[in-house]
Amino acid sequence: MEKLRETLRVRKERAILVAAVPGGAGQADDLAELTALAQSAGAVVVDRFQQKIRSIRSATYIGKGKADQLGERVKRFKADVVIFDNDLSPAQIRELEEIVGIKVLDRSELILDIFATRAKTKQAMLQVELAQLEYTYPRLTQMWPHLDTVTGAGGATGVGVVGGIGTKGPGEQQLEIDRRLVKRRIVELRRELANIDRRRVREITARRGLFKICIVGYTNAGKSTLLNALTNAGVLVEDRLFATLDTRTRRWSPARGVEVLISDTVGFVKNLPHQLVASFKATLEETVNADLLVHIIDVSSPDVLKQIESVDAVLDEIGCGDKPILMLLNKVDNLKNLSQLEMLQTVFADAVAISAKTGFGLNTLAEKVVEKYKGTELLVRVSASQSNGKVQSFLRAHGQIINEQYLDSFVVIDARLGQNQLPDLQRLHPDQLEIIEA
Image 1 (tube, rainbow, N blue to C red):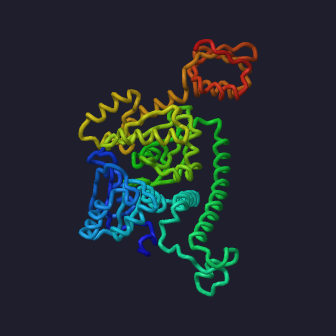
Image 2 (cartoon, rainbow, N blue to C red):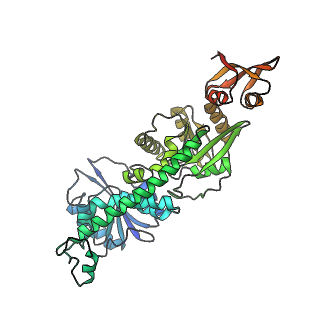
Image 3 (cartoon, rainbow, N blue to C red):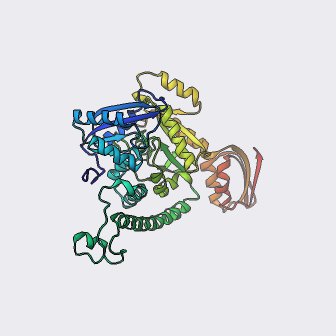
Protein backbone atom coordinates (compact mmCIF):
# COMPACT_ATOMS: atom_id res chain seq x y z
CA MET A 1 0.00 0.00 0.00
CA GLU A 2 3.04 2.25 0.17
CA LYS A 3 2.50 3.96 -3.18
CA LEU A 4 -1.23 4.62 -2.85
CA ARG A 5 -0.88 8.11 -1.39
CA GLU A 6 2.21 9.43 -3.17
CA THR A 7 -0.12 11.96 -4.81
CA LEU A 8 -3.64 13.20 -4.24
CA ARG A 9 -4.14 14.23 -7.85
CA VAL A 10 -6.89 12.38 -9.72
CA ARG A 11 -6.34 13.79 -13.21
CA LYS A 12 -7.26 11.17 -15.84
CA GLU A 13 -7.71 8.50 -13.17
CA ARG A 14 -10.70 6.14 -13.24
CA ALA A 15 -12.81 7.00 -10.22
CA ILE A 16 -15.58 5.29 -8.28
CA LEU A 17 -17.73 7.72 -6.31
CA VAL A 18 -19.27 6.74 -2.98
CA ALA A 19 -22.04 8.46 -1.02
CA ALA A 20 -22.84 6.97 2.37
CA VAL A 21 -25.96 8.45 3.97
CA PRO A 22 -26.32 7.74 7.70
CA GLY A 23 -29.82 7.17 9.02
CA GLY A 24 -31.31 6.01 5.74
CA ALA A 25 -31.95 9.52 4.41
CA GLY A 26 -30.80 10.72 1.03
CA GLN A 27 -31.94 11.32 -2.48
CA ALA A 28 -31.17 9.92 -5.90
CA ASP A 29 -28.96 12.90 -6.80
CA ASP A 30 -26.64 12.66 -3.78
CA LEU A 31 -23.67 12.13 -6.11
CA ALA A 32 -24.50 14.79 -8.68
CA GLU A 33 -22.22 17.42 -7.15
CA LEU A 34 -19.43 14.96 -6.37
CA THR A 35 -19.56 13.85 -10.00
CA ALA A 36 -19.08 17.45 -11.14
CA LEU A 37 -16.24 17.92 -8.64
CA ALA A 38 -14.48 14.72 -9.76
CA GLN A 39 -14.81 15.66 -13.42
CA SER A 40 -13.50 19.15 -12.68
CA ALA A 41 -10.45 17.53 -11.09
CA GLY A 42 -9.89 15.58 -14.31
CA ALA A 43 -11.08 12.15 -13.15
CA VAL A 44 -13.10 9.79 -15.33
CA VAL A 45 -16.10 8.57 -13.32
CA VAL A 46 -16.62 4.86 -14.04
CA ASP A 47 -19.08 3.95 -11.27
CA ARG A 48 -21.25 5.43 -8.51
CA PHE A 49 -21.86 3.56 -5.28
CA GLN A 50 -24.63 4.97 -3.04
CA GLN A 51 -25.28 3.38 0.32
CA LYS A 52 -27.75 4.11 3.11
CA ILE A 53 -26.20 3.08 6.40
CA ARG A 54 -27.76 2.77 9.85
CA SER A 55 -24.75 4.33 11.55
CA ILE A 56 -21.17 5.37 10.82
CA ARG A 57 -18.70 2.55 11.45
CA SER A 58 -15.52 3.66 13.18
CA ALA A 59 -13.26 1.40 11.10
CA THR A 60 -14.52 1.84 7.54
CA TYR A 61 -17.39 4.38 7.77
CA ILE A 62 -19.60 2.14 5.60
CA GLY A 63 -19.02 -1.21 7.31
CA LYS A 64 -16.79 -4.16 6.40
CA GLY A 65 -19.35 -5.88 4.17
CA LYS A 66 -20.03 -2.81 2.05
CA ALA A 67 -16.30 -2.09 1.88
CA ASP A 68 -15.78 -5.60 0.47
CA GLN A 69 -18.50 -4.89 -2.13
CA LEU A 70 -16.69 -1.68 -3.00
CA GLY A 71 -13.45 -3.64 -3.45
CA GLU A 72 -15.19 -5.96 -5.93
CA ARG A 73 -16.44 -2.97 -7.93
CA VAL A 74 -12.91 -1.56 -7.97
CA LYS A 75 -11.69 -4.74 -9.68
CA ARG A 76 -14.66 -4.91 -12.05
CA PHE A 77 -14.29 -1.30 -13.28
CA LYS A 78 -10.47 -1.25 -13.04
CA ALA A 79 -10.63 1.89 -10.94
CA ASP A 80 -7.60 3.93 -9.82
CA VAL A 81 -9.22 5.94 -7.03
CA VAL A 82 -12.28 5.84 -4.76
CA ILE A 83 -13.74 9.23 -3.80
CA PHE A 84 -16.16 9.54 -0.85
CA ASP A 85 -18.74 12.30 -0.59
CA ASN A 86 -18.08 12.21 3.15
CA ASP A 87 -15.23 13.37 5.37
CA LEU A 88 -13.29 10.34 6.56
CA SER A 89 -10.88 9.93 9.44
CA PRO A 90 -7.26 8.93 8.71
CA ALA A 91 -7.91 5.48 10.22
CA GLN A 92 -10.96 4.98 7.99
CA ILE A 93 -8.98 5.98 4.88
CA ARG A 94 -6.17 3.60 5.79
CA GLU A 95 -8.56 0.70 6.46
CA LEU A 96 -10.51 1.29 3.26
CA GLU A 97 -7.31 1.41 1.20
CA GLU A 98 -6.26 -1.92 2.67
CA ILE A 99 -9.60 -3.44 1.62
CA VAL A 100 -10.10 -1.92 -1.87
CA GLY A 101 -6.41 -1.89 -2.84
CA ILE A 102 -6.36 1.61 -4.36
CA LYS A 103 -6.16 5.22 -3.24
CA VAL A 104 -9.15 6.56 -1.25
CA LEU A 105 -9.94 10.28 -1.04
CA ASP A 106 -12.68 12.07 0.85
CA ARG A 107 -14.67 15.12 -0.23
CA SER A 108 -12.38 17.68 1.41
CA GLU A 109 -9.24 16.19 -0.18
CA LEU A 110 -10.90 16.30 -3.60
CA ILE A 111 -11.84 19.97 -3.25
CA LEU A 112 -8.34 20.80 -2.02
CA ASP A 113 -6.94 18.94 -5.03
CA ILE A 114 -9.10 20.99 -7.41
CA PHE A 115 -8.01 24.23 -5.76
CA ALA A 116 -4.37 23.16 -6.09
CA THR A 117 -4.72 22.66 -9.85
CA ARG A 118 -6.57 25.98 -10.29
CA ALA A 119 -4.21 28.19 -8.26
CA LYS A 120 -2.19 30.42 -10.59
CA THR A 121 -1.14 33.50 -8.60
CA LYS A 122 1.30 33.41 -5.71
CA GLN A 123 -1.43 34.34 -3.23
CA ALA A 124 -3.77 31.56 -4.38
CA MET A 125 -0.97 28.99 -4.34
CA LEU A 126 0.03 29.96 -0.80
CA GLN A 127 -3.58 29.82 0.37
CA VAL A 128 -4.13 26.37 -1.13
CA GLU A 129 -0.87 25.00 0.24
CA LEU A 130 -1.76 26.24 3.72
CA ALA A 131 -5.20 24.65 3.51
CA GLN A 132 -3.69 21.34 2.38
CA LEU A 133 -1.13 21.30 5.17
CA GLU A 134 -3.68 22.22 7.84
CA TYR A 135 -5.87 19.39 6.55
CA THR A 136 -2.96 16.94 6.51
CA TYR A 137 -1.25 17.82 9.82
CA PRO A 138 -3.73 16.22 12.26
CA ARG A 139 -3.98 13.19 9.96
CA LEU A 140 -0.28 12.34 9.80
CA THR A 141 -0.53 9.75 12.56
CA GLN A 142 -2.33 7.07 10.58
CA MET A 143 -2.47 8.27 6.99
CA TRP A 144 1.04 7.44 5.86
CA PRO A 145 2.45 3.90 5.84
CA HIS A 146 6.16 4.80 6.21
CA LEU A 147 6.07 5.95 9.85
CA ASP A 148 8.74 3.62 11.16
CA THR A 149 11.52 4.44 13.61
CA VAL A 150 14.49 5.96 11.81
CA THR A 151 18.08 6.63 12.67
CA GLY A 152 18.98 9.99 14.15
CA ALA A 153 21.72 12.47 13.30
CA GLY A 154 24.48 9.91 13.70
CA GLY A 155 23.03 7.42 11.23
CA ALA A 156 24.99 6.73 8.06
CA THR A 157 21.96 5.79 5.98
CA GLY A 158 19.96 8.08 3.74
CA VAL A 159 17.19 8.05 6.32
CA GLY A 160 19.65 9.04 8.98
CA VAL A 161 20.52 12.09 6.95
CA VAL A 162 16.80 13.02 6.98
CA GLY A 163 17.01 13.26 10.77
CA GLY A 164 19.95 15.65 10.53
CA ILE A 165 21.22 18.05 13.16
CA GLY A 166 18.56 19.05 15.64
CA THR A 167 16.60 15.81 15.71
CA LYS A 168 16.23 13.81 18.89
CA GLY A 169 18.83 11.28 17.86
CA PRO A 170 18.48 7.48 17.60
CA GLY A 171 14.90 6.32 17.58
CA GLU A 172 13.13 9.46 16.40
CA GLN A 173 10.12 8.47 14.38
CA GLN A 174 9.58 9.64 10.82
CA LEU A 175 6.21 10.88 12.06
CA GLU A 176 7.89 13.42 14.34
CA ILE A 177 10.08 14.65 11.49
CA ASP A 178 7.05 15.00 9.22
CA ARG A 179 5.12 16.87 11.88
CA ARG A 180 7.96 19.28 12.56
CA LEU A 181 8.48 20.04 8.86
CA VAL A 182 4.76 20.52 8.24
CA LYS A 183 4.37 22.75 11.31
CA ARG A 184 7.35 24.88 10.25
CA ARG A 185 5.94 25.30 6.75
CA ILE A 186 2.51 26.25 8.14
CA VAL A 187 4.14 29.01 10.21
CA GLU A 188 6.00 30.30 7.13
CA LEU A 189 2.84 30.30 5.01
CA ARG A 190 0.81 32.10 7.67
CA ARG A 191 3.52 34.77 7.89
CA GLU A 192 3.53 35.31 4.11
CA LEU A 193 -0.26 35.40 3.94
CA ALA A 194 -0.41 37.83 6.88
CA ASN A 195 1.71 40.24 4.82
CA ILE A 196 -0.68 39.81 1.90
CA ASP A 197 -3.62 40.37 4.26
CA ARG A 198 -2.12 43.65 5.45
CA ARG A 199 -1.65 44.84 1.86
CA ARG A 200 -5.21 43.80 1.02
CA VAL A 201 -6.58 45.70 4.04
CA ARG A 202 -4.69 48.81 2.93
CA GLU A 203 -6.16 48.46 -0.57
CA ILE A 204 -9.68 48.09 0.83
CA THR A 205 -9.18 51.04 3.19
CA ALA A 206 -8.13 53.19 0.23
CA ARG A 207 -11.49 52.40 -1.39
CA ARG A 208 -13.48 53.62 1.61
CA GLY A 209 -15.13 56.45 -0.29
CA LEU A 210 -16.44 54.16 -3.05
CA PHE A 211 -19.54 51.96 -3.04
CA LYS A 212 -18.33 48.34 -3.09
CA ILE A 213 -20.24 45.42 -4.62
CA CYS A 214 -19.17 41.79 -4.30
CA ILE A 215 -20.48 38.99 -6.52
CA VAL A 216 -21.03 35.77 -4.57
CA GLY A 217 -22.56 32.49 -5.58
CA TYR A 218 -22.22 28.78 -6.00
CA THR A 219 -19.28 27.67 -8.10
CA ASN A 220 -19.99 27.80 -11.85
CA ALA A 221 -23.08 29.99 -11.35
CA GLY A 222 -21.72 32.66 -13.72
CA LYS A 223 -19.81 35.13 -11.52
CA SER A 224 -16.91 35.65 -13.93
CA THR A 225 -19.27 35.87 -16.93
CA LEU A 226 -21.25 38.58 -15.14
CA LEU A 227 -18.12 40.55 -14.23
CA ASN A 228 -16.99 40.39 -17.86
CA ALA A 229 -20.43 41.45 -19.13
CA LEU A 230 -20.55 44.51 -16.86
CA THR A 231 -16.94 45.68 -17.02
CA ASN A 232 -15.12 43.92 -19.90
CA ALA A 233 -12.79 42.53 -17.23
CA GLY A 234 -11.43 39.73 -19.42
CA VAL A 235 -11.71 37.17 -16.59
CA LEU A 236 -11.31 33.50 -17.54
CA VAL A 237 -14.69 31.84 -18.12
CA GLU A 238 -14.95 28.05 -18.24
CA ASP A 239 -17.80 25.60 -17.74
CA ARG A 240 -16.20 23.87 -14.77
CA LEU A 241 -16.16 24.20 -11.00
CA PHE A 242 -13.68 26.64 -9.41
CA ALA A 243 -12.40 27.87 -12.78
CA THR A 244 -10.98 30.99 -11.08
CA LEU A 245 -9.74 31.40 -7.50
CA ASP A 246 -8.49 34.99 -7.45
CA THR A 247 -10.65 37.99 -6.65
CA ARG A 248 -10.73 40.64 -9.36
CA THR A 249 -12.05 44.16 -8.73
CA ARG A 250 -13.15 46.50 -11.51
CA ARG A 251 -14.87 49.89 -11.76
CA TRP A 252 -18.41 49.85 -13.10
CA SER A 253 -20.75 52.71 -13.97
CA PRO A 254 -24.35 51.40 -13.79
CA ALA A 255 -25.77 54.88 -14.54
CA ARG A 256 -24.60 58.38 -15.45
CA GLY A 257 -22.73 59.93 -12.56
CA VAL A 258 -22.63 56.66 -10.60
CA GLU A 259 -19.38 54.73 -10.23
CA VAL A 260 -18.94 51.65 -8.05
CA LEU A 261 -16.33 48.95 -7.48
CA ILE A 262 -17.44 45.40 -8.26
CA SER A 263 -15.52 42.23 -7.32
CA ASP A 264 -16.03 38.54 -7.91
CA THR A 265 -15.10 35.83 -5.40
CA VAL A 266 -14.13 32.19 -5.29
CA GLY A 267 -17.17 29.97 -5.79
CA PHE A 268 -18.88 28.25 -2.89
CA VAL A 269 -20.03 24.64 -2.56
CA LYS A 270 -21.81 22.79 0.20
CA ASN A 271 -19.52 21.75 3.02
CA LEU A 272 -16.63 23.89 1.78
CA PRO A 273 -13.63 22.69 3.85
CA HIS A 274 -13.03 24.97 6.81
CA GLN A 275 -9.32 25.00 6.00
CA LEU A 276 -10.13 26.69 2.68
CA VAL A 277 -12.45 29.26 4.25
CA ALA A 278 -9.69 30.15 6.73
CA SER A 279 -6.89 30.18 4.15
CA PHE A 280 -8.87 32.31 1.69
CA LYS A 281 -9.61 34.93 4.34
CA ALA A 282 -7.78 37.61 2.33
CA THR A 283 -9.83 36.77 -0.76
CA LEU A 284 -13.09 36.72 1.17
CA GLU A 285 -12.18 40.07 2.76
CA GLU A 286 -13.79 41.69 -0.28
CA THR A 287 -17.08 40.08 0.74
CA VAL A 288 -16.79 41.16 4.36
CA ASN A 289 -16.17 44.81 3.38
CA ALA A 290 -18.77 45.06 0.60
CA ASP A 291 -21.67 47.52 0.80
CA LEU A 292 -23.83 45.20 -1.32
CA LEU A 293 -23.64 41.49 -2.12
CA VAL A 294 -24.90 40.31 -5.50
CA HIS A 295 -25.85 36.65 -5.11
CA ILE A 296 -25.87 35.04 -8.55
CA ILE A 297 -27.90 31.84 -8.87
CA ASP A 298 -27.89 29.21 -11.62
CA VAL A 299 -31.64 28.73 -12.17
CA SER A 300 -30.99 25.88 -14.60
CA SER A 301 -29.50 23.70 -11.85
CA PRO A 302 -31.81 20.98 -10.46
CA ASP A 303 -30.23 21.61 -7.03
CA VAL A 304 -30.77 25.36 -7.07
CA LEU A 305 -32.38 25.60 -3.61
CA LYS A 306 -29.60 23.53 -2.01
CA GLN A 307 -27.02 25.72 -3.70
CA ILE A 308 -28.66 28.86 -2.33
CA GLU A 309 -28.59 27.32 1.17
CA SER A 310 -24.89 26.45 0.78
CA VAL A 311 -23.97 30.02 -0.21
CA ASP A 312 -26.01 31.43 2.69
CA ALA A 313 -24.20 29.05 5.07
CA VAL A 314 -20.75 30.23 3.93
CA LEU A 315 -21.82 33.89 4.15
CA ASP A 316 -22.97 33.29 7.73
CA GLU A 317 -19.66 31.57 8.52
CA ILE A 318 -17.60 34.56 7.37
CA GLY A 319 -19.90 37.08 9.10
CA CYS A 320 -21.80 38.41 6.07
CA GLY A 321 -25.24 36.98 6.76
CA ASP A 322 -26.78 40.38 7.55
CA LYS A 323 -25.40 42.33 4.59
CA PRO A 324 -27.77 43.73 1.93
CA ILE A 325 -28.16 41.15 -0.84
CA LEU A 326 -29.47 41.48 -4.39
CA MET A 327 -30.34 38.07 -5.84
CA LEU A 328 -29.83 37.37 -9.56
CA LEU A 329 -31.55 34.44 -11.27
CA ASN A 330 -28.94 33.70 -13.93
CA LYS A 331 -28.88 31.40 -16.97
CA VAL A 332 -32.55 31.91 -17.84
CA ASP A 333 -31.49 31.26 -21.45
CA ASN A 334 -30.76 27.64 -20.43
CA LEU A 335 -34.23 26.99 -19.04
CA LYS A 336 -36.46 24.59 -20.95
CA ASN A 337 -39.20 24.72 -18.31
CA LEU A 338 -40.13 28.12 -16.86
CA SER A 339 -41.84 26.63 -13.79
CA GLN A 340 -38.58 26.65 -11.81
CA LEU A 341 -37.98 30.33 -12.62
CA GLU A 342 -41.57 31.17 -11.61
CA MET A 343 -41.12 29.28 -8.34
CA LEU A 344 -37.92 31.16 -7.52
CA GLN A 345 -39.47 34.52 -8.40
CA THR A 346 -42.30 33.69 -6.01
CA VAL A 347 -39.92 32.76 -3.19
CA PHE A 348 -37.50 35.64 -3.89
CA ALA A 349 -39.82 38.43 -5.01
CA ASP A 350 -37.07 41.06 -5.40
CA ALA A 351 -34.75 38.84 -7.45
CA VAL A 352 -33.77 39.89 -10.97
CA ALA A 353 -33.89 37.38 -13.84
CA ILE A 354 -30.83 37.72 -16.09
CA SER A 355 -28.57 35.97 -18.54
CA ALA A 356 -25.00 37.13 -18.02
CA LYS A 357 -24.10 35.32 -21.25
CA THR A 358 -26.63 37.03 -23.53
CA GLY A 359 -27.04 40.32 -21.63
CA PHE A 360 -30.73 39.79 -20.87
CA GLY A 361 -31.85 41.68 -17.74
CA LEU A 362 -28.56 43.53 -17.17
CA ASN A 363 -30.30 46.92 -17.55
CA THR A 364 -32.72 45.95 -14.78
CA LEU A 365 -29.73 44.83 -12.68
CA ALA A 366 -28.11 48.24 -13.17
CA GLU A 367 -31.31 50.02 -12.09
CA LYS A 368 -31.55 47.88 -8.93
CA VAL A 369 -27.91 48.56 -8.09
CA VAL A 370 -28.43 52.31 -8.48
CA GLU A 371 -31.40 52.08 -6.08
CA LYS A 372 -29.23 50.29 -3.53
CA TYR A 373 -26.40 52.72 -4.14
CA LYS A 374 -28.55 55.77 -3.53
CA GLY A 375 -30.57 54.36 -0.65
CA THR A 376 -33.72 56.08 0.59
CA GLU A 377 -34.38 59.21 -1.46
CA LEU A 378 -34.29 62.49 0.45
CA LEU A 379 -35.13 66.10 -0.42
CA VAL A 380 -32.18 68.23 0.66
CA ARG A 381 -31.43 71.97 0.64
CA VAL A 382 -27.81 72.84 0.07
CA SER A 383 -26.23 76.25 0.41
CA ALA A 384 -22.78 76.74 -1.05
CA SER A 385 -20.52 79.48 -2.32
CA GLN A 386 -20.88 80.04 -6.06
CA SER A 387 -17.15 79.43 -6.27
CA ASN A 388 -17.63 75.91 -4.87
CA GLY A 389 -18.29 74.30 -8.23
CA LYS A 390 -17.72 70.79 -6.88
CA VAL A 391 -20.94 70.89 -4.81
CA GLN A 392 -23.01 72.04 -7.78
CA SER A 393 -21.43 69.45 -10.11
CA PHE A 394 -22.05 66.66 -7.58
CA LEU A 395 -25.74 67.53 -7.20
CA ARG A 396 -26.26 67.71 -10.97
CA ALA A 397 -24.47 64.39 -11.53
CA HIS A 398 -25.94 62.41 -8.64
CA GLY A 399 -29.26 64.05 -7.79
CA GLN A 400 -32.36 65.58 -9.30
CA ILE A 401 -32.38 69.38 -9.12
CA ILE A 402 -35.79 70.69 -7.95
CA ASN A 403 -35.04 74.40 -7.43
CA GLU A 404 -32.02 76.68 -7.70
CA GLN A 405 -31.58 80.23 -6.32
CA TYR A 406 -28.60 82.54 -6.63
CA LEU A 407 -28.23 84.96 -3.65
CA ASP A 408 -25.28 87.33 -3.73
CA SER A 409 -22.23 85.03 -3.71
CA PHE A 410 -24.20 81.93 -2.67
CA VAL A 411 -26.37 79.41 -4.46
CA VAL A 412 -29.20 77.53 -2.70
CA ILE A 413 -30.20 74.25 -4.35
CA ASP A 414 -33.11 71.97 -3.50
CA ALA A 415 -32.43 68.45 -4.84
CA ARG A 416 -33.52 64.84 -4.43
CA LEU A 417 -30.57 62.71 -3.37
CA GLY A 418 -29.97 59.21 -2.07
CA GLN A 419 -29.31 58.89 1.66
CA ASN A 420 -26.11 56.91 0.99
CA GLN A 421 -24.74 59.85 -1.00
CA LEU A 422 -24.91 62.37 1.86
CA PRO A 423 -21.41 61.51 3.21
CA ASP A 424 -19.91 62.14 -0.26
CA LEU A 425 -21.73 65.50 -0.44
CA GLN A 426 -20.56 66.50 3.05
CA ARG A 427 -16.94 65.81 2.06
CA LEU A 428 -17.29 68.62 -0.51
CA HIS A 429 -17.86 71.10 2.38
CA PRO A 430 -21.11 72.86 1.54
CA ASP A 431 -21.83 75.89 3.72
CA GLN A 432 -25.16 74.42 4.81
CA LEU A 433 -26.89 71.07 4.32
CA GLU A 434 -30.47 70.54 5.45
CA ILE A 435 -32.83 67.58 4.98
CA ILE A 436 -36.25 69.09 4.31
CA GLU A 437 -38.13 65.90 3.46
CA ALA A 438 -37.36 62.25 4.24
